[in-house]
Length: 153
Ligand code: TYD
Image (cartoon, rainbow, N blue to C red):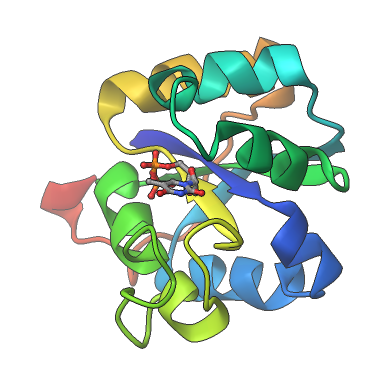
């Protein structure tokens, strides 16, 4: 089963949206394999957003991501990386489709509620950036019969 990283950004924390977004992921059939709160710092964000450090908006992005502690979560499931990105929606909340997290909760390109890993390579790198190995749990639902068919497991 694939694992992916979700970050509840300060916009989700300030607007008290964490619970209902976790509920969406759980209702979908994704399993929580790790969850914790942490304060991000500039060094970690420069690594995480290395592809954006030269962009004009990067100082604003740094401030936005350090404004409050964040909650990081590892989700597990069949094709979890793709599924979570689809549920997250387009980067800019004003372009994100209704029904997606950003489409339902964000009016902003920056204050867009959650981060989600965008590829298998990114997911592996990001999970090891934000979690120690022992903070990710290899448990699974005891009864997955109504989440996946036998040939999907
Ligand atoms: P990016 O990795 O392009 O998108 P995504 O979060 O959908 O994977 O951008 C990372 C974050 O940088 C994005 O969630 C919000 C911020 N950002 C801006 O503030 N302005 C921008 O124009 C872009 C492209 C991103």
